[in-house]
Amino acid sequence: MNRPEITLILARAANGVIGADGRMAWHLPADLRRFKQLTMGRPMIMGRKTFDSLPAILEGRRHIVLTRDRDWQDEGAEPVATIEEALKLANAPHVMVIGGAEIYRLFLPLADRIELTEVALEPGGDAAIDYPATADWREIAREDHPADEAGRPAYSFVTMTRK
Ligand SMILES: NC(=O)c1ccc[n+]([C@@H]2O[C@H](COP(=O)([O-])OP(=O)(O)OC[C@H]3O[C@@H](n4cnc5c(N)ncnc54)[C@H](OP(=O)(O)O)[C@@H]3O)[C@@H](O)[C@H]2O)c1
Image (cartoon, rainbow, N blue to C red; front, top):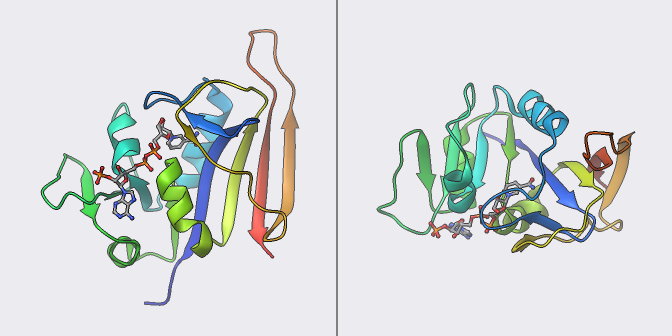
C-alpha cells in the first residue's frame, strides 16, 4: 500500500506546552468535540504515555501505540515499535497522529497536515513542542474563539498543510 495521508492533531498552549503530569493543562470541550469529529473512523497512532493518559478507549477508532517495550500490552491497544510498523498495521488511506510530544516530533517530517488548536494560556508543563515552522507549513484555515465567561481561554482551530 502507498503511504497514507498523515495528519497530526494537537492542542498547544502559547508557550508550547501540550501536557502536564500526563494530562492536558486545560479543559476545552469544543476542542474535545473537534478531536472526536476529526479522528472518528480513522486509525490513531500515539505514544505509550499518551495511551496511558487516556481515561478510556475511544470508541470507533483504533489505538496503535508506539513503545520500545516488546512485552508491553494493554486492552484495546495495538503495540508497535517503529513508524513503519505503525503505518503498515494501520493499513488505511488516512491516519491521525494524536501525540504526545515525542511522537509528534517523530512523525513531523512525514506529516501532510496539522490540525492545531492554539490555546491562549501559558501553563506549566513537562511536554512541549515547537510551533510548526512557517518555512514548511502553510496555514489554510483558521477559526478564532474568544475567552468565555466560564473562564475558558481563547483558542483557535488552525489547519496547516505542508508547503
Ligand atoms: N495537547 C495535546 O494535543 C496532547 C495530545 C497528546 C498527549 N498530550 C500530552 O502529552 C504528554 C505525553 O507526551 P510525551 O511526549 O511525554 O509521551 P508520548 O509521546 O505520548 O509517548 C512517549 C513514549 O512513546 C514511545 N516512543 C517514543 N519514541 C519512540 C520510538 N522512536 N520508537 C518506539 N517507541 C517510541 C516510548 O514508549 P515506552 O516508554 O513504552 O517505550 C515513549 O516513552 C501527556 O501529558 C499528554 O497529556 C497532549
